Length: 332
Length: 307
Image 1: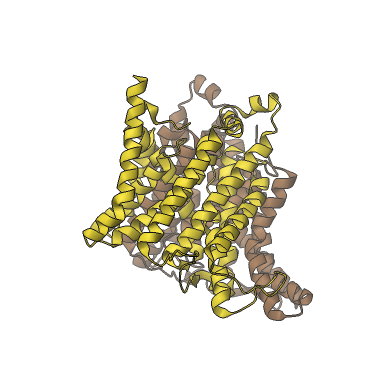
Image 2: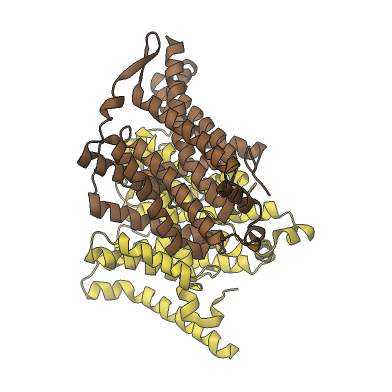
C-alpha cells in the first residue's frame, strides 16, 4: 500500500516535470509561442507560492502580505535598470553607482533587499499571531504599496519600464524559451532548497511550532527567532520571484504588491495543497490557467472564480496535489 | 491662520474617523462574537454606496437613498452569512480569508455588471450643500459636519443597544462565552445572523454617506477595509470602544500627516523637491507607522477586549 501510493506521487511529479520541460518545443511546434510566456509567468508565481507555503503550510503563519516581497524584488531590478538607462546615480547610496543590468548582481540585490524588508516586517508582525498576524501583514504590504505609489521618480502609480531583460554572461534572457528554462531551473532549485530545509532540524522546529507553539517553547526553543528566520527565507524567495517577474514582463509597477496579488498567491497555495512543496506549483498552474480560460469566455470571469474559491474552501480540503498524489502527497 | 487650518483639519480627521468607526464596529463585532475574519466587509460598504447612488439618482432624494441602502446592505449581509459564511465559523482563519476573498471578487464583478466599471459621482444633497462658519471666518462644509454627527449618533445608539437591550446582553454574552450562551438555550445561529446583518448595515451606512464626498467605484470597499484593519489592530480586536478610539486616532494621524508633514519637512530639508517627495511617502505611511508603534507597546491593541 505504502509502495503503491509512493509510486503514484512519483508518477504525478514525473509527469508534471516532463510536461514543463517539453512545453516550449511543443508550443513552438504548434506555433503558440504565447504559451511560453504564459507558463514563464506561471512558474514565477509558483516560486512565490512555494515560498509562501513555507511559512503558511509548514510554519503555520498566515501571511496576507506576501505580495510586498514580490514587489520589493521587482522594484530592485526595475530601479537598478532605470538608473542605467537614465545614467543617474542612485540616491542615498555611497559612491555614484548608476545601477546595473547584470542578472547576477540585480537578482542578488533583490533577494537581499526583500529579505531585509521581511526581517523588519516579520520582527514586528511576529509579536502577534492568528488573525492579528493576517491583518498586520496585509497592512504592512499596503504600506509598501502606497510607498511605491508615492515614488514619483520611478513612475508612481504607472511604474517603470525595463529597456531590456537583465543579462547573464553567455546567456541571453531576451529569448523567451531560454528565459522559461531559467525560471524552471530557479523554481526547481528553490523547491530542492525547501525540501532540505523542511526536513532539517530547523524544519522540524517550524512544524512543531505549527502544531503547538507553547509546547515548543516549553521544550526550550526560542520560537520567535525560528519563525522570524523562516519568514525572512520566504520573503527572500518571493523577492527572487519578483525579480523574475520584472524581467518577464519588462515592467514594474506597484500593482505587483497590491493586496489582491497577495490574495492570489495565497489562493494558489490552498488550491494546490497547503503544507506540500509541489502543491503550490499545481495551484499556480490551475489558478492562472483558469483565469486565462475564463477570461477568454467572458470579461466578467471573476464572478465565476469567486464562487469557485468558496466551494474549494468548503469542500476540497486537500487541494489538487493531495487529490492527484493520494495519501502520499505530503512532502517531507 | 494656522489655527484655522488646524481646526479645519481636525474636523476632517473626525469625519474620516467616524466613517472608519462605522466600518470597524461591525468588523470587530463579527470577529469578537463569531471569531470570524471577514474580508468581504468592504463589499457591504460598496453595496451601500452603489445602492444609495442609484436610488438617489432615481428619486432625487438623499434620505430615501440612505433609507433603501441600509436594509439592502443588511439583507445582503444576512444572506451571505446564511448561505456561505456560517459554515466557516469553526474553520481556520485561513479558510475564512480565502472564502471571503472569493466573495470580494464576486461582489466587485457583480457590481461592475450591474452598474458598469466607471466611477459614479454623487452630488451633495441640496439640504446639506454649502458651508457654515464654525467660528467666525472659518467656513466648513455642512455635509461633512452631518457625517460627523451621524457617526457620533450611531456610536451612542450602539452603546445603548449593547448595554441596555436584551439583544445587546446576548451579544456581550456571546463575545465572552459562546458555548455557554447556546447551552442556556439561546438560538445562537439567529444571534449570529443578526450581528452579521447589523455589521453589514453599519458598513452600508458608511458607504451611503461616503458617496457624495468620495467616488463611488469598484474596489472602494477594499481601500477602506485595510484602513479598518489598521483601526482594529490599534484599538484591539472585539472591542467597540477600541474601535471608536482607534478610528479617531487613525483619522487624526492620517489627516494631520497629509496636511502638516510636507510643510514640516520643508523646514528640515534644504531641497524642497526632496522634502515634498519624502513628505508624500511618509504621510502615506503614517498610519502604518502608528500601527507599528502600537504593536511594539501593546501587541494586542490599546483596548484588549478579552483573551
